[in-house]
Length: 110
Image (cartoon, rainbow, N blue to C red; front, side, top):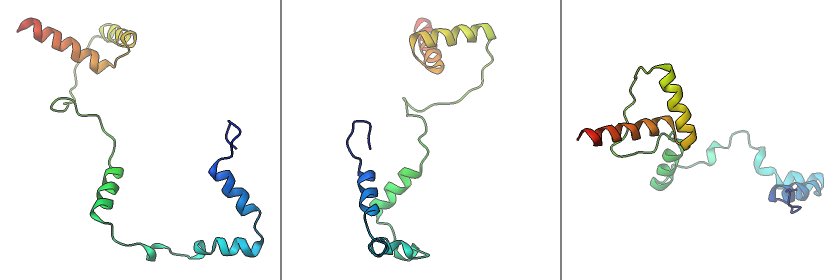
C-alpha cells in the first residue's frame, strides 16, 4: 500500500492474482508461457521509431546560444577554491560563474 493508506495499482493486481485458483492463474498468465515472444513484434512506425530514437539518446547538456566548447584551462588552486565558494554561495555552477565573469570583462573592454 502507499504511504497515504490508499491501495496502489500494483497492490490491487497482486491481490487479484493472489485470490485466483491455480487453474485461473495459469489461464490468466498463459500469454507469458511462450519461450520467445519476439515473433509478435512488428516494424516500428515512423512516429514510434522517432520516439524510440529520442528515448535512446543520452540526455546531454541543454543548448545555450550556439552550443558549448569544452576547454582546458590552468587556474591557481586558491583562485579556483574561491570561485567554487562563490558559485556555491550564489547557487550557480562553476561554469556559469566563469561565463558570467568572462562576459563582464568582455563588456568592460568593449
